Image (tube, rainbow, N blue to C red):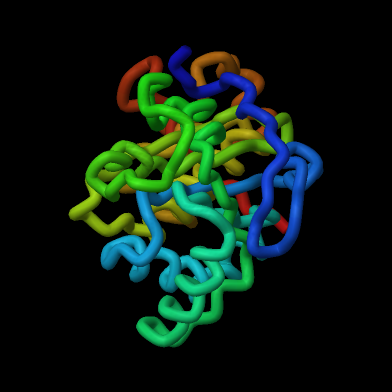
Length: 220
């Protein structure tokens, strides 16, 4: 079954580089970033894991935990973590999930059921579709997902921008326009009436009746 935005993120128990965990319990009452990789010791993914390690404080400041998953076992992950630090200078302090039976990546609709139940013997190309980023909210629902080809490194500054937008929507009932950056004007969502918008945000500008801009809501 396809996994879509606003679906409950599949729960699972797994071994990780930080020990065993139950996913929903691990998320707790905050946000989570789950990002997947088709194989350990792959070049583009090595740069990604190191980049996220260097940005971890930015996600932590937003109440968002980070967790990675690769279609290999934890023992392989531990060796890869050393390579990532050597290549990028960043220490991976977030957990990496082992998924040698492919159970989790299939639950998240990244591999088909026909992929079998063993990571052993599979190449990165066999697992090329295990390249999705999921942002999961405190309600354990998928708020966003982005899938990249193996040859294109993910832009985690964009993913951080996406997280900012999602959290702003959850807190303030606003949307963000194209190329929005934190601090820019935002859009009142259609479900909020004009009177409600004024009461919450003050006056707005409306180039179209359904397009109402208000100033960025300053938050603590």
